[in-house]
Length: 397
Image (cartoon, helix red, strand yellow):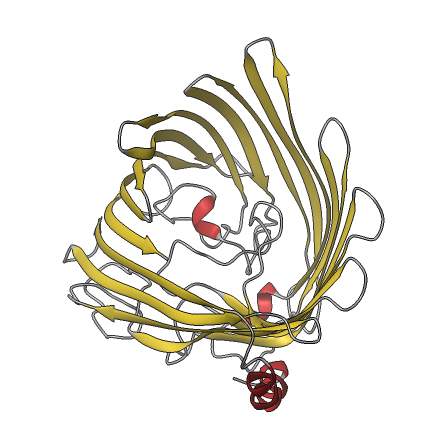
């Protein structure tokens, strides 16, 4: 831990004593997952059985301040996969390496009217995760060493500003790829209207060239954008819609020069237990660099096979359709099936990258959830055929 979190640690002893008689809520989160990956060009098929555990507590408030401390471990039951740290390079990557670390360690203060200030190692999710998220699908989630201020003094308006100096990535503290360092600022302002929420955002992501990830400084960027999302009933159906635009340039010592745009349009309709949707997402590329979102929950976008965690240099044009079914069954709080089809092409030039099919079944019973998930990328002119499937059980107290 460094920077802001070091300063937080100095305050922990005082805070723990002060909160000795306050209400304490336990944190317990366990997840067992099997992930299989078969990828053309690699000799072996990955089979990763991993166990993730989170254990911690959150105190009640003393002087309008609460402490949250949460440790996390990821234990590989089998290691027939490339975790990025275990040296198994003949297998496809499953980015769930063995680790144990502080996942969150934060102080939250609400002394100022309608304002929340959070200091320390924390989870940050902005909007739909497209630009900033916690990568919650991976066993070791992404967290941030930061100070975050959220203010709701003006009716319907939320102002959200964060300064961060360290990104704790999914690869874990023992990996050369496990940390991003640099002085970054995230500003997000949203206003609720009857048709939906309008959000303006400005994100300056500065990655220090000494960070252990080769070439990571090439993702240092300034991004400015707008997003609008809402829903409304149409007879017996519910119509939801999202539109977003952003523009991006290099910053903070990035050796590249680029001026790239991002576009998203999505329309979904729900009727009873059924849903159907379609969308288009475009990230531009200039032939050298593609539009970059290094702090995003990338698994949520461009398919679950994770073939486009880095935007290709000629950008990407992702056109997709989705369908779903969700309802409560006797004994189950929720049962849902979702599926999607993606068609991928270059934003710049005529190249057709490939296509993908994604399927998931999900069920929840009390505090236990179970997930069966499948993704299949069919390559055309970029990357290689890849099939992935997951079986997962999670318990959250």
